[in-house]
Image (cartoon, rainbow, N blue to C red; front, side, top):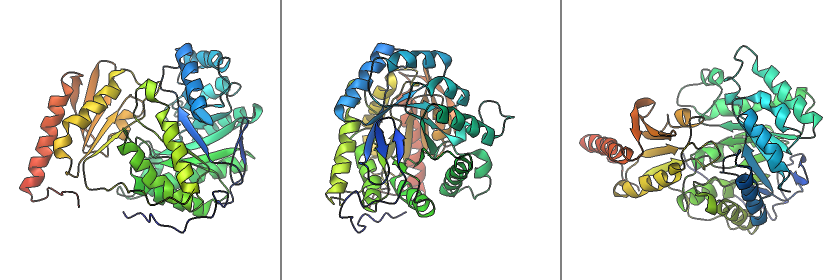
Length: 397
């Protein structure tokens, strides 16, 4: 998939698609408002002091909106204490338990929900009723919403409508259906994100959505972009062409980083916005066809702090295969890990004590953190040997 990295630049980032204004507390996104850079806390939500401190660090670094994961009643209770310790505009990331929205909406300025995760709780309840429940709670408390569509957790019913190789059409249809429902409910304070780990797909899916719904503000990002500097390069490759075309109202650079360096997401995001505003959109593109390590940004769902270190170790261990067209996914939790490693050649998703190793969608077993690297190398070598035997080493061009 080719990306046009040289669209006609806008004279100003104010010359954007005619998206409506969405209020996130004191922050406004949409046409006529500055592009807001976001980030997410990686501390455990129930560690109130650490999470509040990181939220303040990100705010001071320039983040306009800061996201916190809430997966349980205990997380929601902690959020109430965090709210008292930071002035940052906060957004909550709801994954599986949509009913927690009634607990968090009074405390934050925005709630993000994933359409593909609405099926995990109360499967007998139609997704439309769940969205209505979320929207009504948000409306009562003046909260904005983000419909966060992710490549690794697409609505299973929509996936069945399209050929297996078409990963973008189910994402697009999911976003459009949720927009239509929110519109019918009379709720217009929402934005949409459509994220993939492939920069080319991020460009294509956001162009397609913007063409059909130019009124809806877009949150741009590359999911599981990985570690810097590669993760920054992937994100620039996707976001700069879109911003140059007037697409995008808020962005996040999702990087795998230890907690003390989490502000680097904000720094990278602010630089992307500055470069787009100045017309500097000719950055070196991320080139497919070489070893690609995707890894999620650490967040409060990570069950073992060794996850970030493991991702770095995987990058170092696999440098000998740098020119091989192989994708290795390293995920930090059981919420996103199982599904979002399926499309990788080799996938690791990390639990509290063990790392689960996959080849494509096949699970190979669980290994201790000090055992996983040799087994991963064994599987990588097998892939390389198989491709070499077929005359398909596929070096980077």
